[in-house]
Length: 416
Image (cartoon, rainbow, N blue to C red; front, side, top):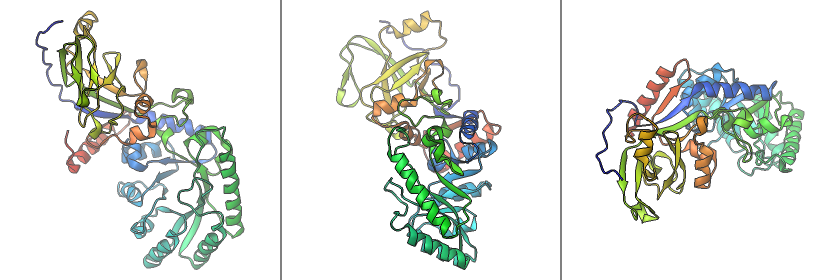
């Protein structure tokens, strides 16, 4: 094995590590999904910083692609979109007693209401002298927030009394499905029946509803009977499949996030070399190791040993434990010779290392990392840390979007 010094490539002054967000993929995913749910309206769910993709950039792209609604979990997320100039209807549904309901009402943000929030919303509306717009939530079986069916008639009665007083308007009713990603299970039918019962009670009480909504991404794609007036699509906007047995490509979706970095170190080691904390991996023969400067502080699960990293068209598994800032791939014996034989320009040091992307050219997918970590694709994309800069491509304002992302990172004090 050669022991010559590896030539150091000149810096390219790019980002050392980056999550590349393809806004055109997001727009195309939305257009595809809108066809699937028509004539129902479409809510793009941009909670959790748009599942790690950047809430403002995704929201702008979604509105340009024709979505009628945006969805957030928290009022604070919705207020940030309003402050950025987005005027489409926004629904926020997860609250605490310290939620700023007054600010939400003042900014024309619709509020999900499961029961206890009603008095808080009414108090804020009275103080402002402006009626709140609320969507009543019924728990049809998921067991999280939402009124129980037993409490629903009383809850509806109280809400409609406040509507008669003029302090709020009941404009929507909604619920959330528990097992729509497993279409054969009967619980979705049971939830749908409960939802229809709740709607009937609400409409009998005099509610003139603008929207009724229960469908998530999985139901949007597999259960047209759940579409009603509006669907709430999260994961599908970002090009990922909610189904364990169906890929993004099979659903006509394209993953929008590519996570990539550069090989930070490349060295030859003998047989018997232990790798990373615990020395759980030991080289079986002389080989070349590549150091990948991403770790669990960047959102890669510590447990995900074996996750794929693609370098120069070849995918290698991560070996040894993933550390806070870095992980190691075993490039195998003769890695430098293979590089030379393939006439690949440059050296392995500084070569692009892709952890996941859209799968083009046989590249790795986020689902492979989820499998290595024993989790789901949702978790992987939402946990990519703010210290990984987002770079936006494929959008009309990708330059401005990149500047926003860079400034956001600088303001947070996150280092590279």
